[in-house]
Length: 581
Image (cartoon, rainbow, N blue to C red; front, side, top):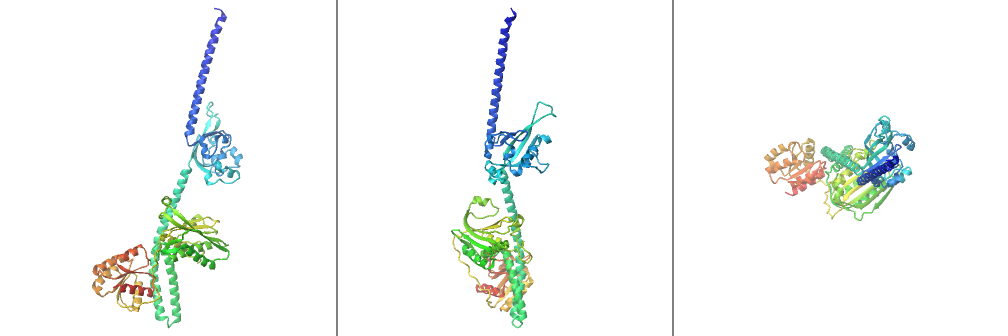
């Protein structure tokens, strides 16, 4: 065989090898394309945003999940990562020369995780970086140097890692950029914030409940002491004031001071929600009109008072005087917040609160229609720490002697006792808005008949007074004796029961204090009725008409009298109780 005879054979072998190489290459390409399509399909199904950036932080890849931010992948390709980062969070993402040129000198916490720090620190993975991203709808605001609206911000959790060349030694590896995953945690973050808000409201509600119980106890003790003070002052005035003008004046001063303290304790009881509320049909628009008329004569001329009473229905069930006092207290607080003048606006609307809304609140309201009274001012506003304490009794930001700190506290108690809710929105320098929700009246309730307290009624009979406070026993005995009654006193419920057993046939009426050590008013009445089932008893207490008092009246007490009481009030209650014999 000649030397040339082998060339076709080698050519055919090379051609076969080339075809095989091409076939292998085509198979590899198809495999790569299949693999790429598979990963693209997988990435399209992943709700998280997958991205990669080059060493300078410019996007080189974005998964289709970027649509959740309102962008198309193509419009961000080649742009810097900071293009979608909230301006205030730029420094969280990187600290390198690129961003320093892009945003100026960046400062911050040296220990904070940085997405682009792998090149400097050698970190391979950054996990759990919380950063705000700007949706496409917020980019215009950012471009103008402003901040995007809350709805245009995504709260994201970013995990990222650096990419390095693999064909060189570890020391010579080149930083190729970063790949990462962005997870939308906006809903989770909002839920956490809402939970924190509800927990804070719950803590505030529990604190207010505890303060309310304390306030009620203080008011009860005050009323006991005031009973003796005002009672003795009244007797001094009656017995000695006629012949001694100076003594008469002193007694009037004591009575005036006692009435002011009684008014303060009344506000404490309203705050504690143990004060009697006369639930009658009341037109809140008329109540607001009365308050506005009063304010027009008392507030400074540089405060404009306006009304926007748009509610189609304005009838609520409530105590007109208490509602008027609550609205007036809120308005006066608003006036004090506008020393340089401003605007005070009263507005009403009808709102419907459904069960779903109420379930999200820390306070309980019945689902239904409510009259919403809004009282807005353009005053100095309050910071969060002040707003958190604004309903506390005796808390005030006014100078000493300029306020008792009971105005808003009593308003809070009034609204709660009317099965409503009160909330305050305020910001320093931007005024305050007080919102009062009151249930609309389904029908009218006739008002209770009042008693004229200034008309003493003389009488006769034997009355037993049971009270653990000695001064209350003494003043009650003096008052009743002056009215013509024979009086027996006892400082203990248990001793009173033993004494009553020996002389119950002589006793026409018993006056029993509700709260006594060892033997309460309820227990004392039970013991007295065990001896004489027909015993007539009057309940006396420093509290006003509340649930417990109503229960006791249903258990055998025929009348109720609140401390402190005047001789005229005591005489009328005793006379009424004795008439039922």
